Image (cartoon, rainbow, N blue to C red; front, side):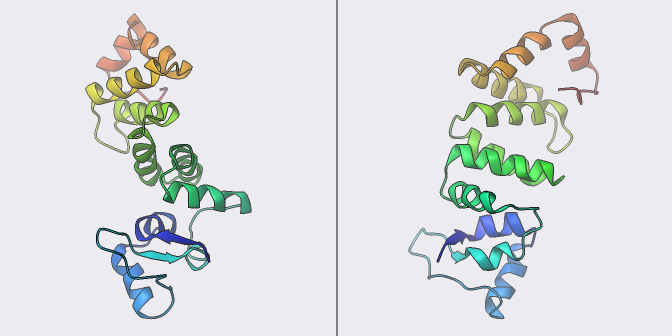
Length: 166
């Protein structure tokens, strides 16, 4: 029986921590085992899937399980699933998890979100830093964005507030 962490269950279900715990107490969700010291509560993956607000395909199940285990590529892929479901705030969480492991695609997406300031507060310095990290890993989109932001048009956009084209 596959299991996922409480944090991932909260993320893919869209339910609050309190609601998840209520469902555990009511017997609607199964806690796999009591967490070890410093461990995470694990829940039955199939039961959590039934609560998912994402349009998931069978192949997405492996992505969720791998992301929950800390796989940076899977975390970025899960973030993209959230983006397609118009849940950008959840996407940013997973991009951040992936970017913290130096995955260039996630760093580029996170940098763009920081620059745009639509889902998270705008922070140009952090956005540029994420793009620079991704560009240093030879990420072509990040390299192009860094180059563009140094042009007259790029500086004009940075001075304004309309960075949606990033």
